[in-house]
Amino acid sequence: MNLALITVDSLRADHVGCYGYNRETTPNIDTLAADADVFTNAISHACATRPSFPSILTSTHGMLYGGFDHLSEEQVPMSVPLSENGYATGGFHSNPYLSAQFGYARGFDTYSDQEEDPNLTSRIRRYVANNVSGPVHDVLSWIHDKAEEHGGVDVGAYYQNATDLTDQVIQWTESAEEPWFVWAHYMDPHHPYVPPEDHQLFGETFSRRRGVKLRQQVLENPDSLSERDWSDLTDLYDAEIRYTDAEIGRLVEHFTNTTWLLTADHGEEFYEHGNFGHKNRFYEEHVHVPLIVGGDAAGSGQHDHLVGLNDVPVTLLDVANVPTPDTYRGWNLFDGDREAVMGGWGPETGSDPNRVRLMHRTPHRKFIRNTIDSTEELYELSTDPEERENVFADVDASNHIDAVEKFETEIRETARTTDAVEIDEDLQEQLRNLGYKE
Image (cartoon, rainbow, N blue to C red; front, side, top):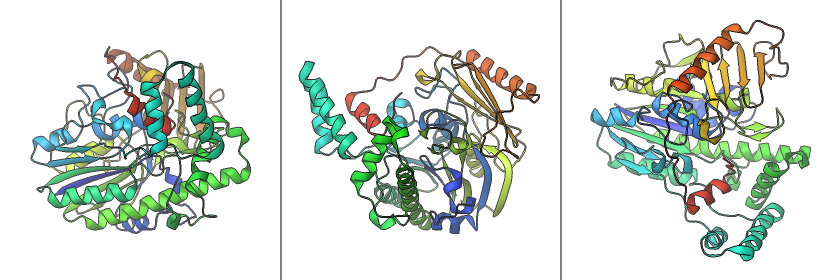
């Protein structure tokens, strides 16, 4: 049996139709979900791509083994045991933090992490960075930044669009020898939001310039956005989801003799807690993600028990009847015996175990410890789903504290001293365009 892992960047669960959203953002996913297993309480172990994917692909945690700069030897992508057991393996994405130089190509026969060719503006910026120095460099860079800030200038191809990615994955699956495993990561719901016009069904139709300009404004001065600006951002985000949904529908329709799993690496905040995007925090808009299993080996129905994204590799390997590596920490999604999901993030890719933000998420509570700012938060999710009232001072949080302190010990015990991956100017340019500030 073939296996497909479909991940979507920045897709929060409550903007998906089958998770209760009141807009038709995901008609194809909703149709697929009607005959699939839908997990309503799936939680990401991190709140951004870089610390999240070690869980999704290696069933470990981004905070272990020295942090999430790159995959360590102990973090074994599921592509490795699948390849060793006779699967053809292909990985396709355009997120720079998932590129081969960060260790994600291990076990893949074919690994495509290409970015689109930069446009003229972006090529000029790269030429300036590589060939011009001193005051001239500073002036030209300032002009570029201001052009984007005030004019909404398109500064380059931020990622491969969903149509091209789908075409590429379909072409590979048609030529790959069965059984195969394919991973496809869609970037389109990641800001900047520049959806095709024919998918802009919510509100008015916006130009690409408007999407880029709004992105720049919200990253630099979110307090300056009007209520209309926030509404426009939401409309654009939902249109990106609608576009991605259409391409996911086209991809899954192509599958035969395949079990597929659809999820997201993290969500996206629209100022619910005073910020935009995915700013390394652990509120529900950041960590509650969709998770759907469909195809030949799946059943159908809704599953409300707590699951984490490091359950994904274990489940797919179980479908393939392939043993899991010893370092895997997840369970099969269908076992339903998980008591909590542990989340984590730290500055400088989590390399300092004494400076961390950690989450202990149980079915009805969430505890967040921030050793950077020396704060602790506890929310009763059953009565306060929007996480407005911190009740840490009023209730017994000893079980959460014990779990977090145990995880802090694991972080220290598994810490490694390794050289960080050197990022060249081309990669730095793409990261800047996507709003990454690490």
